[in-house]
Length: 525
Ligand code: SF4
Image 1 (cartoon, rainbow, N blue to C red):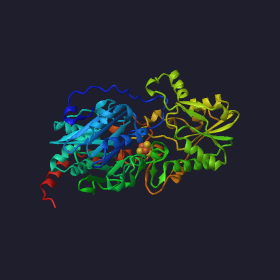
Image 2: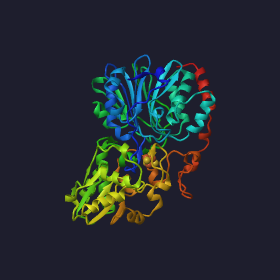
Image 3: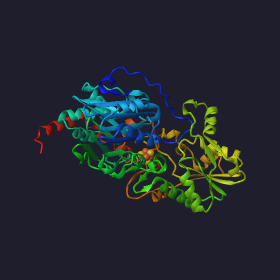
Image 4: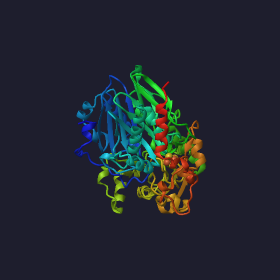
């Protein structure tokens, strides 16, 4: 059952939903989160949020949560597990209100427990807010210490809770949540697409570089508004895409309508290009074009850059498939279904021993020998990160009878860790930071290996926005404090712009508290 916030502060029984462990079969990048918010009086907002989270499930499988504003307080239900494991019919029936906020999480900050699941709650005098976050903040250690010095207690180790408590702290100064949000945006650094609800309003805001996506949609006949990480979550509830929430913008949706304000000056646009490579669902629209079409264009570009003499093209399901089609089209080769993927493998039961890791790949993928036997195969996948499964996939194709296996990767080499909400591991675990292309080819047992270039990737992606491509280039759009990145880089492997984490990060909370107090004393227009 859903619970009232005040009850939730005490002891809460653990949910029997099975904990979704990260599968060792999957050695790729992991998105941190998906966010879905809705303001729709008269609608079943919890159920619509449930559907929205279903559409965003690929962005995080470790926990799910829904908070609802019922006009007087905020109700919440969250737990470890997949969306359909966390919420029962009774939960959704109990979550009644006109505004709701949902979240699915893949943990890159804080612990994997109930407290770490989102939305996070914070109390501002008598007002309860719930906050959901996609991204990672790079400077919350210092801010947490400052808040703790003011006797503010934390229930989790997450950066999101720091943001929730900061919003609460500053809102108490002016009694306007939008001011609390704007002040918080000026203090926090990193990548954030966040949404907040209180009992009767929805807020959404995005970091000044727009690293993580957040979109605005409208329900038919003016029935309400939706914010979501991807358009696939708008489509599933029948909402029309209106626009992206601008970097640095704060939206407020309530009985007073939709209002927009600037929370912080926008900076150089730097949306994560890995949304195009891997994270976003292929049917989501980014910058006016489906992610499927962009991956297809990347595959065609890949074929021009690193062609292969072969008979057929096979994509590794699922995110390698559009690239394989693009590669085949540009190469005038047939594209074939070379694998059957088992979608029902219980990830929880795959244990991290080498023997079972190998078994895990076989549990998940089976090569179609009727298709690949006697063929020279181009095998297309979206990316290689740690490289621990590609050699097993190549082996599967060879065992199924392929005479040659030419691996083509529909993105550049991942050589730098991500600090903006994506789990890329440390640099010593990134195979491309540690081996030459020839070394990787040998390691995975392919006859040839080729990657898309950074220029080719940017050529194939829609051009209206600026991108972060730091995991390929080492050019980080938001400076990273050394304390945050310590131990993440190989010795002597200096990324660009790391050292620019300067005075702004040293800003203490008192500075802004003083500023907020001064502003509060000014008469309001
Ligand atoms: S470093 Fe890579 S994964 Fe991280 S935000 Fe930038 S492009 Fe995305």
